[in-house]
Length: 305
Image (tube, rainbow, N blue to C red; front, side):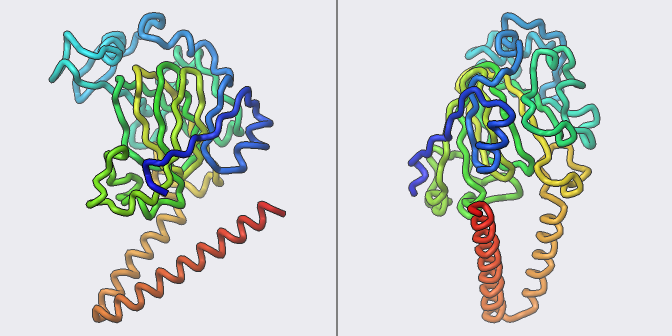
């Protein structure tokens, strides 16, 4: 499938906890959820109605929150740091940015009263609630997270493009990010495999939720001034995750060990002549492919029984 062809993300309306857990969550695919009650935030979190009292730090410069909101909502700025068309972006952090995940209830307690987290998971699974503000036109790179995620688009419209974990080989990964920055007009001489990645797409309206399962790649583009909240929770047992990960994007502990073992294995292969190295590397790739295929087949069979 050509990367310019789009698959629309399915839309569900008036979803409650039972419906989500029964009909949506087991599919492990993105879904847009409409008319899920989010609280007063949908009408309150606009540049003109909510009293923004905090200060924010931008590139080591401080702005009052109301001034930041004003600039983020403007297309052209009369006051600016570098240029009149500069963009603004805020992502909330924990109190200790190296250890503590973001939590709307702690960093912005007054705003947290306005936002009702959908109860689609158990309280002990909660990991973080990340408050975000974006200028119109601001785009975030394609990446994946290791935890399940509900993206609540409270204010403004946002385009989201997603790619399945099964297309990871076509996305030119460096860590958790894709090297293909321009996903709409990619350089196919530099990234020829990118055309093989199936593109899922949706536009979130104010009040919409997007369920993004763990490992699904996503790229966001703010079509308008936007305010939103990401809610992350632990899909795997708690001890599967890196305890020193405040952002929820470090690979699970077992995956990290496996990748480290792979690096050691590749180092051992360097001891062989080139033709032997190539031969045994191909055998290793074949072994991984066969193992992954068997696991996928077993999973499909278990889902149909």
